[in-house]
Length: 470
Image: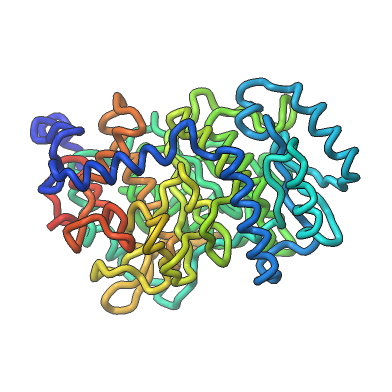
């Protein structure tokens, strides 16, 4: 696996020019502009946050089993991630006044200016709180779940790499150690034979310590897709096959030997996003200082079930701040097979929603998208091969196995961004995203709700002769 970057750099098309037959298409240009504009300084207005609250209240009435019993999330005006980033500590007095006036039983939250509140009737409490102008949002707390599904093809080949042109991308770039990708998940086996050399120190945002280990396979599998070491005579190769550093961020609690709690904290996810993007989410002396500079990319392979037409404000605000700081946040669209909604946080205005395709390039049956409002942005291999094999990657305890899901597609897309940043560190984050959008393969020759801008083609994005784009 040799790198011929100096030679092939002469062949790379201008990054913001027509990179494919779609590059000069006015409709494509308009769609890309719209994708950037949805994540501008006007995103997540107070009206948006309240509308999202109402949507979650209605969803909780219809599907109470998908919400944490007796719990709601409360965010305050001029509070949360953005104010923490800007040093607005005076918001603390306002938060304390609201808690006192409403008699809130606030639990520990991983994000300053956001409360997880215990309530006998979360819907009634949230409805009452929304009448208070000091409250930005209040709604029952939806459950978060990972989006990987196991199958038995544990020794299948890595069909997704050559089929979608990753081997050709490696002729240009395999990854630079200056590029960092944070992975937010249920935990990791950081000692795995094929991963240990690729991890930087991480953090557990629920246990508030540096131990990110778990017996659960999901996070380890995601990490292997993104960055398992290559040319080491072991196991598999990740899409970012060398160099790129992974920062493991855990957001789940262990509940037994080798087990992980199904309750994943939305505030822990928000705190992890904030921290990775250089923001101290809960004030000083609450853990390690955030990275400076921030990571380049964040990968999130979890979300709400069922999907929703509205975002999750506590995470959306953290993702907005990340984008302001130049960090790209990729999130899984979800595995509910929905055609009318995408799971949160992928459906937020600043997240890059990633769906899944099978080897035949058809959208996987489980992959969520929205026909009308919030389409996915990109799709990547996360489904099955023609022979029925899933995505082979790392499992805990030096094992390997297959999973399918939008969880698997998301690190593939995130790794593609990491390789592009490795090759062109001078690019701004919106230029990286523009390049991924313009070089994606659109099987139906236009931007489509099911595919978004298309299938991530890392080879085409890097200027290699593309097999993915055919």
